[in-house]
Image 1 (cartoon, one colour):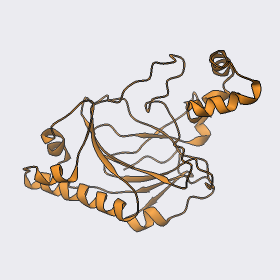
Image 2 (cartoon, helix red, strand yellow):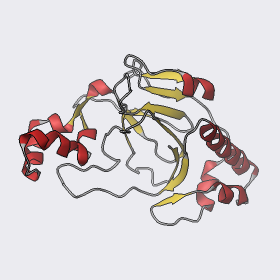
Image 3 (spheres, rainbow, N blue to C red):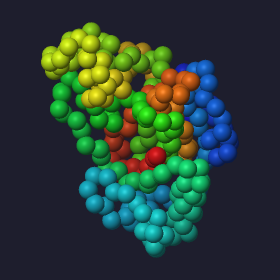
Length: 232
């Protein structure tokens, strides 16, 4: 089960894919979860994929060709069905085995990698879908429990030292370098783990959005297990 006690106003749970994609975001709700208890051995799939670097994309043909046990076959069918559902919806899902993401050390006081709480932005209406099947799962930060890093005075002062233009162009500079997408958790924040097997739809910052974008981050790999992640 997912502990939503401190974010229940922000997250709505559904029981099928149709409701996942059709339930509108509104008010404070900017994350919708198709809660599922999946069967099958996803670890077997992770173990049998030939890794190529820290992130390995699994093509459907490769997935179908894996020699798997009965439990591994059950897991494969779930993966293939999730990919099929999302593609039919018009999304472009990618299935990855992740050992780790590259870290951003360009500005030590302000990393902009996916381990930092951030929101996604798009010039057109779109949602982010993701599901972790194996390994550590992503986290959501309730919007009320985060603050934009560019609004924190000491961070803003450091960013101004990097900028050499006019005052009028400073906000554009922050946007062009994606600084304005990142958030810092407040001291009493309680992030929500997205759990294993649940398929999530998260609100994105785009011109037609009626709700705040959903703040989230990739997990630090504490378990030592490679992640099996679907995302689009």
